[in-house]
Length: 292
Figure 1: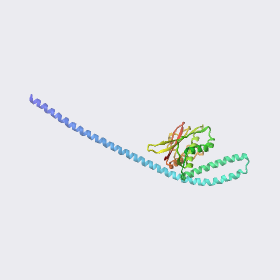
Figure 2: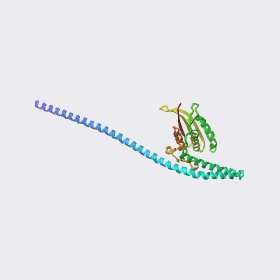
Figure 3: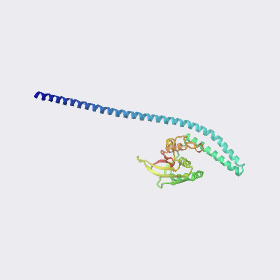
Figure 4: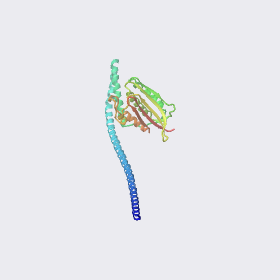
């Protein structure tokens, strides 16, 4: 009887021994799995880093390619503008001389021709300005006053559109800031004209001003130009500031207005953003930094 009990004891000890070995193996296996998981995480991080760097490289290549294209187009545009402007000057001069010999009914038709010549001259000037931007001449002034002057300036242009109204919502707390009056006015005119052209059935353009402070403490004057027009499709949102991109008919634009506007704002150390919803309207927001 004692011999049988001893054998069972031995079996129990052997079983415990195997359990201990199995437990040790399980710990080693779990440790190995944990190490493999850590290695996988590190590998995944490195792969993500490589992908991000590859994406950055690809974006840089695209930017460089676009810059090359813009530079080439700029040279072509400047050359074209130079070649076209000279005969336009001659045509404008001949029209002035011809006007003296026409009766009033014929002069009305002549004025239409003269306006179209002036419009072509304006397009050529914008092409030249895009390739050869003008230097910034800043003066400290109130931006609200410039907006009111620009609204008055563009009223005659808006008369050609049906039921397009401009509403101003200008804050009384806007401080004087340093900016180039001519260049910022050019931006405002571009945005107002674009807004009007986006509302063939009429609508409203609301120009607002306010001030904001960013997380890093920098203060900016905000100018918003919002319309109730047809809006911008999602697929075009990333393209609207690209040179020569336009969804308008050729007679309504060269696709340079927003590109030039963005360049002007950035040279003022500011930024311009856009939000839009198809069939509801578009809002361009300009941020112009200032120091108190």
